Structure formats: structure tokens, C-alpha cells
Length: 244
Image (cartoon, rainbow, N blue to C red):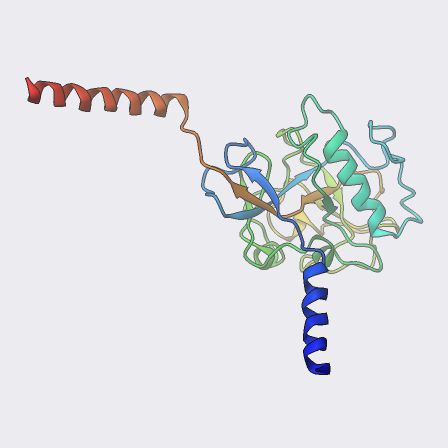
């Protein structure tokens, strides 16, 4: 009897346990790369068009980071999330999505690799549909496929970027919160994430979205739809001629 009750308790606990909700994105959203289909998962990344220490940028949390003292990774994650969802809504391609974002950077207590938690084979794209890496293994192998220079608006920003991170995703000796080391948005070798040490902290940062799941059915482009209609009319005409 006791054994049966234990089993029942376990079942109830599992039933009541919160289930992680997938973040869906419709396949017809412009942010979904053309190569993906329903059921695929991916992450997005961009380099901020504004510096974290530049001053007021329209976000709801304090926009000026105390880069000499702030070692809490959650603060940086909050900043990029608020920036992605609220800054420059007229030109910001990810504004208003409500997604969580993580900084691709390391503090003394948290590495960029662990903070972003990109899947081993989950592709990472920029907001223009460019493939940056095929997964975490590719992201942290010392090079990326294209420069990480695309901003939240889809424009380019090839500047130094505060990361505090080595090419393998671990922190450097100068992590965020201590005049962090930098990468460069225009590079595809290891310099994209780790190029210089002890730089001025007034710089841009990289942001990565939470994992997104593609849903829905792709609607054909107008030109494709026209061809389909014309093809259908042609088939109909041929059938009518045969009947005649």
C-alpha cells in the first residue's frame, strides 16, 4: 500500500511541476530565415547599436552600467532584454517581441558559454537571416561563419564590443565589471569575441535571444502566388479544351 501511495505522490508532483514553454515564432515572420521550416529551432543574435555606458537609450532600467563594479550577469541580461524589446521601436526589428535575451559576455562568476546556453546544434542567425554559427560547438571553436556586426535594426556596426570572454566561451582575466576585454564586430576569427584587454568599457555588447521554435505554414510570396494561379488557370483551360 505504501509503495502505491509513493507512486501516486510522484505522479502528482510531476503533473504539477511547471513545464517549460517553447517560444514560438510564425514561419512568415521576417525574422525566420528562409531555409527553416515548421518545427525547426534557432536563436537570434545582434550587436547593440548603443553602448551600455552611453547614457539614456530609452530603456526602463538604468542605462548607465557601473562597469568597474557590476559583476552580476543578470544585470547585463536585463539590460539587453530591455534594449531589444524597447529601444528604437521604429527601426528595431525585434522590438515588442517580449523575448528574453542574454548578453554574449562573461562576468567573474558566469561564462558567456553558460549564460547564453546555445544548443550544440541549434543554429544562430542575425536579424537579416545570416547564419553566424551552426550551434554552440561552432560558435566557440575559434571562429564564426560571418561577422557578428548586424545590429537590432539590421544595419552594420563594426566596432569593439565588450565581452570579457575567451574564444572558447570562458571568461578572460578581464571579465565584465572590470574594464572588460573586447572583441570586434567586424571579425570572424577568434577576434570577434576576444581581441584586446583592459579597454575603455564604453562600448557595444552582443545579445542572444532565447530559443525560438518555428510554427505555422509559409504563405507564398505574391510573385509565387501569381505563378501558382496562372498555372492553375492553364490546367483548367487545358481540361476545358479536352472536354470540348
